[in-house]
Image (cartoon, rainbow, N blue to C red):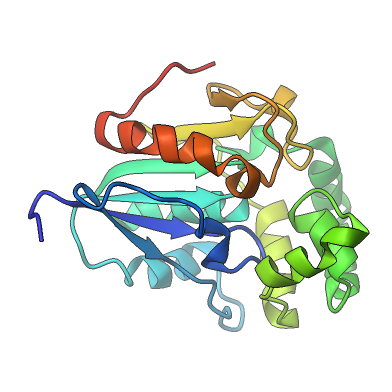
Length: 226
């Protein structure tokens, strides 16, 4: 194997399994793709401690770490324990100031303590919350990708997302965001690379964009940004 190959780790969004990255293809001469999976959190485990546990799965040096949605929040926490070549988030937020108002309200009222239980076993509601949309004819598609439905995980993930308290964005972070994202609305996002007409699930339906630009972003750190 090429010693200069870049190991690229992908972290899926809330409740999603890593098959959401099945259409992402990077040149094998330059990259080796690894998929990370959600683990069930320990009792009273903080997001920081969870991130440390996840970071221990990465044994190579100077890797690229890419996270989608809540996975984007997690990889930012993981980056505090790793020496990375590149940190990229997709359809996510860089700090608490980019959160939509509804999440800020959930945090202020602690409504997140009541909400998660209703997600369990309700694929339509889970899809609406985790992916930002639900269409009856897509239920089978959602079942394929949203497979992490352990109640302990869902309750933990919703709380940690809503209560995430990061003030400043990590240095060198690359943020890719869709102009039509309705989970983390584009109007709240600063300093990102814009994917026109991209929704919250653009990792699935705009994969050609990612296959075209991710190699350059990983190796060089930039393309034209918004």
